[in-house]
Structures are given as C-alpha cells and as structure tokens.
Length: 423
Image (cartoon, helix red, strand yellow):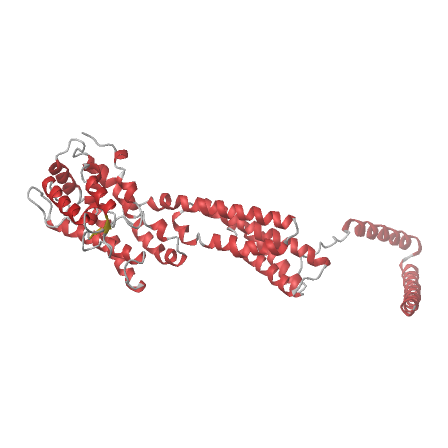
C-alpha cells in the first residue's frame, strides 16, 4: 500500500530548531525499536509518575533540564500509535545496534546515530540551550553536515527504513513509503536555518555552513526554497519603507527621509547579504535597485537645494553618505549613473570644480572656408590686374591701418571700463 507524501504531516510539525527536542522518542525516553507492549508498559510508568509530579525526564541525551510536561508526554505517546508519524521520528533518533531481522551493515547505524547526535548538539548550542563556545561549533557543524550528507547521498538508510516498516506491520504504511520518507528528510534537516538566520551575526557565520549542505545532491536547491519566504518578507518591508521615504521627501521632510533610509532601509537590505548565495540573482538585484534609487533621489534633491542655499555641515555629510551608499548598493546596471551623481555631489560640496563638463562650441569650419575662398579669389583677381608687387604693398599697409584701429578701440574700451568701476 502506497502512503502519499502529503500524509506525513509530522515533517511540518517537527520543522525548526527543536526538531530533535520534540521527537517522541526523546520526550518519552523510549528506544526507536520499542514494540507495542513495551510502549504500553512505558506509558503506564510515565503516567504513574506524572500523577504525582509535574514533569517527565525524557531521554537523558537531549531532554531539557526541567523535563517535559504532562500534555507533551501524553501527546507523544499518542503519536506513537500512528506508524506514519512514528517513522518520521525514528529517522531522527538513535537506532542502536542492528536488531534481529535488520540486514543493515552495523556501520550504517553508527553513522546515522553519529549524524543525529552531532546535528542535535550543534542546534542546542546555536539556540542557547548549551554553553558550547562559538569557536567550537564550526567543527561540529562540519561533521554533522558531512555525516548526514553522505548518508543521504549514498542511499544507505533505505534498507533500514524498509525493515522498520515491515517490523511495525501496520497496513497504513507500506514498504514503498520508505522512498517518500527519505525524500522529505533533507528539507527537515535544514529547516532550522530560517530561525537561526534571524540573528545577523549568526546568519553571517552560518552562510558557509549552508553552502556545504548545498554541496550534497540531496540538499541541492533546498536553500533557495527555504529562504524564499524570508527574502520576500524583507523585500516587502524595504519597499514599504521606501514608499514612506518618498512621501517624506515630497513633503520636504528631508531629515525624516534620511533617517528612514539610514536606520531602516539600508540595514534591512544589509540583513539580506547572508541570503544572497541562496536566492535568485534577479530578486537580489531588484531589491538593490530600488534601495539605490531611493538613496539617489534624496541625494539629488538635496543637491538641487544646495545650489541656492549652502548646506550645513551635517547636511553635507548626509548628501555624501546618500550618494556613496547608492553607488555602493546599486546593481551593475545602475553603477555608471550612480557614480556620476556621486562625483558631481562630491565636487560640488568640496569645491574641486570637477563638475559636469560644459558643452564645447564647435568651430564654424564652413563659414571659415567660405570667407577664405572669397578672400583668395579677390587677391587673385587683383594680382592678375595690377601685378603681385602693388597688391602686397597695399595689403601690408591695410593690415597696419587695421591694427592701429583695433588698438585705439581697445584703449577706449579699457578707459570706459575704468570709469564704470570707479562709479
């Protein structure tokens, strides 16, 4: 009998940083191979204790210091009655040595249990439930990723899962469900990362860990889907803040617009940096584009105002910061325009004089050649009529008279200019 993947709701229930702590075998303290009679006896023992005490200790390897409450313990025992739920939890707890009828290589069980404990312990550390120093977690992550990655990549777990389904002997769960269970396991194993990435420092540190997970075929492509919701949420928040910035800018509330950009928009965008390797390039670039445009628009408007009213020292710093951040954040397609604006603002504020180049007036070559042709024709006609010597003498004399006339005009102009300045 085939069990559709959608019936394994337990995967969704366990997803997150407590996927091991909420495991029914961790809560109850039962071994994963416990039979029906063993489960019933253990439940009677637990209920007798919970009748006089408020908590149950659970598995010593991972249970919280205060144990588990009555409701959680009872719900876990109920969950063991459904083989579809139970098998999900069996995948994520200790298998021990192979039992009778299990044809697995003992090495498979050892590798599986090592992967479980390594992953569980590093998650306990990352969520603050153990005191393992940050510098010691990198090797723990590396070993956990390697253990799970190789186990799932080589298909070593399939034989054991099929054996356990046969041992449970419940018609609600057929042997062919083993493939469905193992296909869903990789997503569950990486499900804690969205919660862990809520802290910026942790996100930056764990980016390389996610890259190692993604290097194993069973996890390829999972992180894009895993972080899609977080990226979309970040984009919507940034977009909403930019709309507020635009309203403040249009209302000429420039200080308020600047503070929104500095304190909310830019930090919100920078928080997306650890997710960049795992999201589509177009989505990241689009977010970078709208942020850069928001920064640039305010910088350019402040520049226009400063042309007529010199800015204060703080306003100058704001303008430079806006222009520089816009260029720094903007995607490649915007870089040329943003860089030009940044340089223009910098030159304007620092007085370097390297503003936009003025358009140069083109030399009137056509008119020049036309006049030159007319003069040349006239000189040729005069030489043909009077000979070259009289024409040269007359020409030199004319140039001398013209120079004298120009000198008189310049002298008069300077005199008039002096009179105007004295007035």
